[in-house]
Length: 343
Image (cartoon, helix red, strand yellow):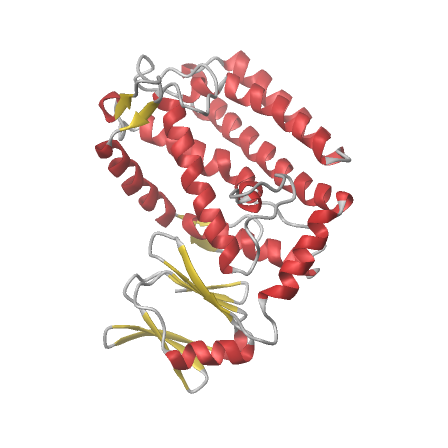
């Protein structure tokens, strides 16, 4: 269990939550793992399949404490929220901001600045750690171009301008992404980002990683009471979790892209884990997906120090902490959304 931003995270898969003397008590079988005073909490997010007692759910609803249930793998299931401070006020505020051009641009600018910063950090680390194994000149030029794009993004006045800046930066980034692949370059050659359908093993891995990350971000947003379908950068489209796509922008390179590079460079995924469809699409085999998902869950358990909160937490909780920070910004508790800026 972790206590961050007045939110209690329950990470033990077989934990059960109950109410005892105005405390949330976390049980694993007959063993008490811990307890937290209910009055200190704004939200509870549990990744346990055992759930919570009706008494605790009722107490949370009565006190306006959000109680979100997710599967151990992070899929959002349901949320209990109180009558006096339900999701409606937060979501109405979200919708009003999403309809305002200046407000939308402000949030979009933070998301894109975070994305460009983290992409630049990934390339800069490759220069530092693998200078002799990569095209130093090409990667250095991309790092410099990304730095210029960050400065431009911070000054952008509208979403269309931001999208143009982001598009140019993405071209520079992916033009040298293949340099970061250090093993089996013959089978894992990368010549550019192709989405639908993925035309190579690297693009197949990137697409699958982005799908998983978008799913985790959507679950995190729903767990804090935000509408994952109404974004600031990505426009509304039926069936698209636009806000989740916004939120994942800052996490693409440092979580998904780094993860894909680890799979390849550490030989966790091999050429035999892919198959080519009749239409030319390259996809992971069933065994390949199993390897991917197993490593994905391991990655989410790795501990990092959050750059804004300066607290240790698992990688898998980053979408949830960012969702909480975004909700606080939308409410007006924070003057600007603190994007996740990797160091």
